[in-house]
Amino acid sequence: MGASAGARAGMPTFCERPNKFTAADQDRVLRFAGVVKQELERSGARVALISRAGLDLSRFGLLYSHAGIALKDDTDGPWTVRQLYYACDESRPRLFDQGVAGFTLGAETPANGHVSLVFLPDEEGALLERAAADKRLGLALLAGSYSANAYAFGTRYQNCNQWVAELMASAWGSLDGGVDARDQAQSWLREQGYTAGPVRIPSHLMMFAGQFVPLVHMADHPVDDLHALALQVSVPASIEAFVRRHAPQAQRVEVCHDQGRVVVHRGWEQLGPECRPLPGDEVIAIEP
Image (cartoon, rainbow, N blue to C red; front, top):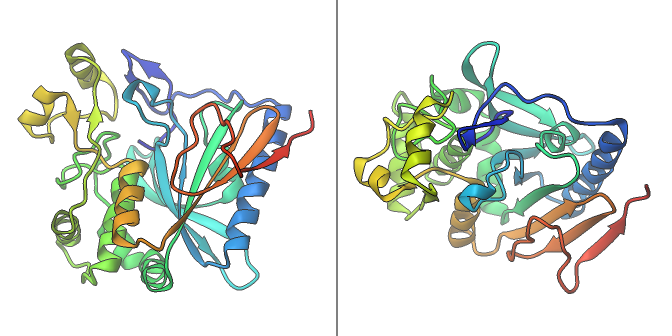
């Protein structure tokens, strides 16, 4: 999950999304991005797991669709997001560094948006920062073929979130990142109890229709998963749940906006898609 999208046959499609942003939309989202940047700076960290609600995956019971690694360039430098994306013009996955504002502008619906930040304990954070900065490792973990719903424990395809999960595994498992880097990372994730998804497909008809949607593939998934309509796919919620178990001292901040306000929530309880604040949340008015 992690490319621009419209919708066809009830499943995501890619490389077809028109730009829906008006000048007012862009101004609101950029102010939202400013709050996200403030939270990154306020943390005192140099690395964070960052996720956004990009595609509308509500039919699958998911809010967040796309994860990356936020890195601070230097002591006073800006934050950038290192991520896998699908290069439509090249028909292949690539690694891409993007500013926080650009990352937030990747949401499908400009009227609202959600960004989740997970700040890691010092040791885990330092290991992940080092791994994310290692271009050789990043490329060793990059698959040649992209699938939005890639099976999390296979190497035929990969989606954006799976690259993040495998990078974390390589960092925290002290893996060598050789020619079988992806196999090593997935083995470590299995050993540590990583659970991908499951992404529950509402019907067999939708599962069948997905075979005709570009960049959605079923051939890599176990037959039992297909019959159960439950696919083992890495999504941001899977990665955050794993981080919370593996590094219990990690802290989460969620930032969302609608057309009139930005809400900052600190804690693992997720805000809903309506961006309604919970008790104790910070609420920042957005002037019309």
